[in-house]
Image (cartoon, rainbow, N blue to C red; front, side, top):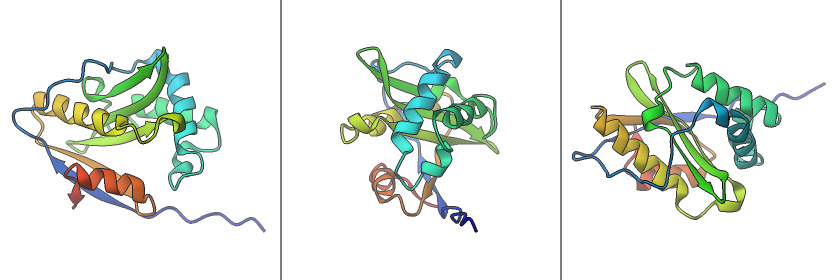
Length: 164
């Protein structure tokens, strides 16, 4: 008999976007479809062994498919103007992907290479997304956080995200 793990418990957090918006971080760029394989590999690396591993599926191929679905609107229309990747030495090391779900911007995914955690990349990417969304006229950003992911919850709460 195979035991299927229970779906992780998640809850919604929202943050109000500042006016004037946060200045753009020129060290980031917008992800493109050409980045899909790299984003999938990055997501798998970042999520493997965490409370969010299930979101990445069972390997790089399924993580890449999840990213493709995000680009294709699975979680609402993809917002490339508010989605960013960070690179180091020509390699993707972190990403924040934003969609609009039911009229509200959603931080669909944010992930950092395991070799680059703790450097503030996720915080900077989220700030960049928030600034871009404010420039686009939005007043809030939502996300869903896994209850068991204390590290992510701490980051989001420190950035002004609060339960809805």
